[in-house]
Image 1 (cartoon, rainbow, N blue to C red):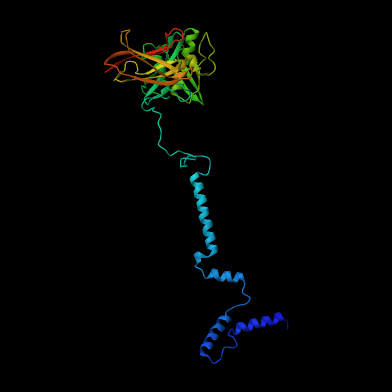
Image 2: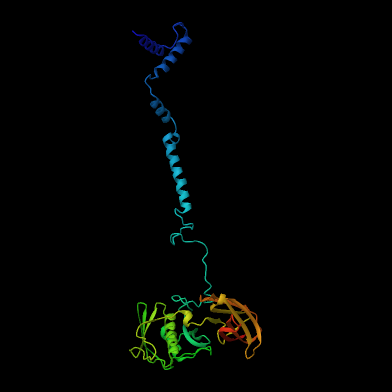
Length: 363
């Protein structure tokens, strides 16, 4: 027998009888101690591995303290933390809060353009005075002859109860402008024979056509086109007919649909929108308008009706150098009737250019 075998036998013998041989067999205390140690030794398994010990150790812990459960919980908590962070950040580069309204929809207070208090004159499809006008009203363009030629100016007129385009054209043909400075080259006998729309093109059949010079005829046609497109914003071009045929012109060929000419070519450069002609208002008087001027500067002055004495004056900003924009200002006035003029001062000699005026009463 080798030394290793003897050592193994001794180990087993020691485990089976752990009390030293020198302890007396008839000692009661020794007997009880031997029995207890022998019982404990019998529970030891020499081939017990580290993994089985770990399994028993884990099995003896409550379920919520076991390593696997703790690892899973840690992973869940980590996932929630990361997911929550992603949710708070929005998940993309959009810094706004996502809402049911769509990706990146802001949730702050709604903003308004102020159009309900003072309707903008900008028409939706053309960038020129917002269409159609206030419900029940229509937009009508007229012509004013100035130093820089005949120009278009717009008035807001009541709708007598027709389709907006027909109502506006009927007003333009048959009724004078409220502002006595405005006029129309169209015959007052002109009537609308037919009107239809196909896509963005309207076909307009009239009973008459103006018999005027070439420049006035061009402005008259643009007056009509601007009025149609202001009251039907789906329309971009107008095919003009007279009695079902091409207009009888000695100046232009009107056989093709006609679009609006650029505003700088045909539109009034400075408009006064408020107070309107003949209006009664209270002080302070709100001055509103629309236009363009050199370096955006629009001058205004107020005179008592029938007098050259200027009782108030000032200036404000509109659009600059061909860009059209709204302008506004206020003025304190005593009760009475006044004339308000808005204009651009000539850079050469200071004389007023592109003047528009309105007579009104302060109550």
